[in-house]
Length: 94
Image: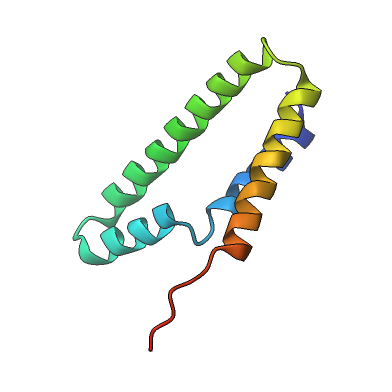
């Protein structure tokens, strides 16, 4: 097992998940539930399953497209999302 890749994957997913919608949903469910362990288990299994599906899909796509093209497409996608977030007009209240 590549421990460096394991650590990089953990740090990337951990930082990406801090403060996202799923964490806010887990906070809301955990705070309003009498069984926070069930909320923890459910949200943990959901994250594991979503990550598993992403890895499977990525592995499948990587068999058909070269790595450089995949990285370029990912970079373009993230840059596009960033630009849209920066330049999308917000509705201001009067």
